[in-house]
Amino acid sequence: MCALTQVLLIALNFYIWIVIASAIFSWLYAFNVVNPRNQVVAVIGDFLYRITEPALRPIRRYMPDLGGIDISPIILFFGIVLVQLLIQDYVRAPLACGY
Image (cartoon, rainbow, N blue to C red; front, side):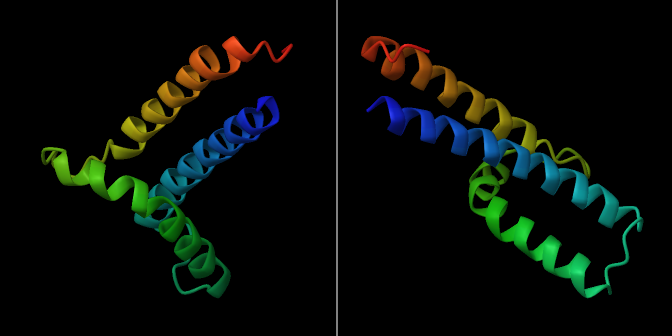
């Protein structure tokens, strides 16, 4: 069970980095820093969109309109950190995994 919780925590950390990369990529795309017609850029953007949009869409649905500012990645980031803390405190700690 300790190994399973450790793998879950690593996956959540990896997903946090993907959300950060997606936010940075969206800024680069919006300010025309990257060429949207480049095939590699399009593939990276499509991958990041497909991997983060299922988690961000429900957050955006309930967020008020902030005039072009999207804080849904920040809310998702805090949600993932909260889940990580809950796993560490209530799942891994009682198991005494030795970490």
